[in-house]
Amino acid sequence: MRNIIPACLLMLSVAGFQASAEERLSDEFVSAQPRVQLYMAYAEYKMANYTLAHAMWQHIEGAGKSEALFNLGILYEQGKGVESNLTIARDYYLQAAEAGSRAGAYQVGLMALEHPELVAVETARHWLMVAALDGDEDAGRLLQSLTDDDAADSDPMLSVKRLLMRGENEQALTQLIHLSEQTPPNYAAMTELAWLYETGLAVERDLEKAAALFSRAAEAGNAKAQYALSVMYATAAGKAEDARLSQHWLSLSAAQGYKPAVAQLENN
Image 1 (tube, rainbow, N blue to C red):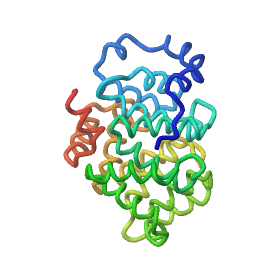
Image 2 (cartoon, rainbow, N blue to C red):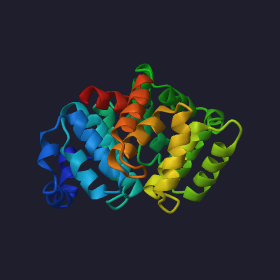
Image 3 (cartoon, helix red, strand yellow):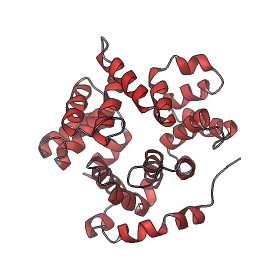
Image 4 (cartoon, helix red, strand yellow):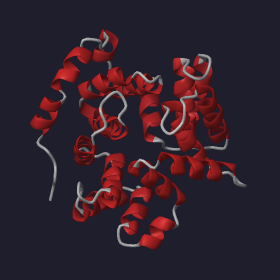
């Protein structure tokens, strides 16, 4: 069922990249618990230190492995700190799904929609079903869209994600701006737009604008934005460093069950 490159070959393809970056890992990071390591790596990613984030995610084992694999897939899909490579991205997403990542399962499904030459529909359906049965509503909707074009067309955020995966960034940006400015605003779209400004994908990187959008979405109750805002306050990337506010937004995000926030709060 799997169309996945063996892990040993995948590791060999990036071995040289890892060797130099691994030397930069701090003792604090290496000795930390996996969930803390995930937070530290995400913070580096937020500050556009993609090479270091890559090395950190490669190092994480145990309870943080599945999320680390998913994040490595994102780096290769978007070409952040590495050359864009959808085949390697797919393999990381599949490994993440096998390790229990709902997000990895979702990306496998998305790739089946946009790049059927890379992921068989049967493979995508399997992992989306696993995620949907685990309570992931987004995976359930994507599973339906694999056989129902109308379902895909009726989900504006799925449409945006498909545009980004195709590399049609300007169209995705236009759609996100429209959704963010409608009445009432689509705060999921606003959070995605903030992420684009934070990473510099489709737009010039602008941390101040990203912070403003994250703040609006966070105040409206978007858990993903609340977590992103917490990291900004913790790292002084986009916001002045403020441990109290970082903890405030982290707690609000965790209270809604946002998994990265829950994991970080447990390790605080």
